[in-house]
Image (cartoon, rainbow, N blue to C red; front, side, top):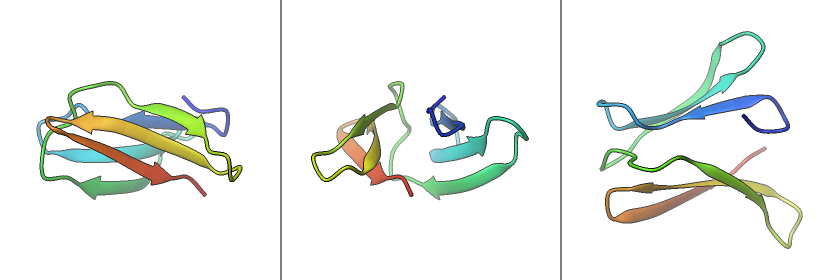
Length: 67
């Protein structure tokens, strides 16, 4: 869970990566990937001050900026 209350889930059989609201359980965002996520997601803050989420999907490193 992120400090902003997001629960991030990627290790599913349908190759989707999802973000849920931790309080309500509502799905806020999802995307379909070319491969299955096979590692726990991590978040980090870039030098520009934005927060990112990154994860490995088989042979790719994928990163998204969080709003």
